[in-house]
Image (cartoon, rainbow, N blue to C red):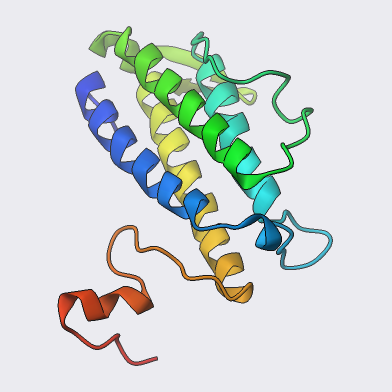
Length: 169
């Protein structure tokens, strides 16, 4: 949980960089990859990250720039680059808007999904929500035969850069 706006900003920037690495590794030809037709594909999961960067902070009264449309009702763009660019814009806006808050805003109560959350909890959920969907995306990337970039440590293919063999499966 965050007690200082500066702490959120530090973590948020790290998480944004992880997300951008994942988005950069998804070519348009693989964006259709899904577990099944009833589940989100890579394109839709990536777009969901854009949407929630707008929608979740809105619950705290923050106005996030860089998104044209209405979250959860606007169709994703046709290219992964357009989604990546939209994510970069809205994530920068999240950082800028949260920077306008003071630490006391983290202890304030805000309405989220029929519940009351503190600002600290709402921002923590925004961060962990993004991590959750990145994890889903990496599984779909593996299923599509794509190289997965490491985030909190090296991916299987990246161990060699550390002069080590990948851990046994």
